[in-house]
Image 1 (spheres, rainbow, N blue to C red):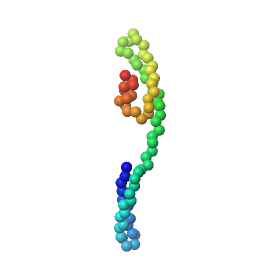
Image 2 (image 1 turned 90 degrees about the horizontal axis):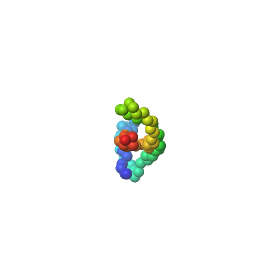
Image 3 (image 1 turned 45 degrees about the vertical axis):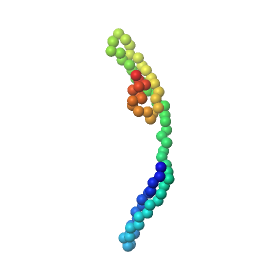
Image 4 (image 1 turned 120 degrees about the vertical axis):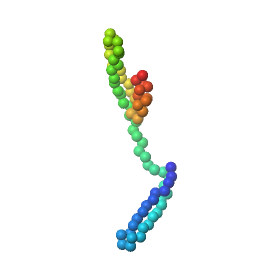
Length: 73
């Protein structure tokens, strides 16, 4: 990634405005920490003769809700 950083400075005495452009070739971005999160849920069947079952699964914390739904399914 590259671009120009625009800097505008105004002199408080004479009011002259100076505009400069400084090139940059990269930017610093934080790398998110990927955690493994364990979740639990109860599956309650519609048939009342069957028992509810506690399930647990692990998923990476940055995953989308769609992947969460897929894992539960």
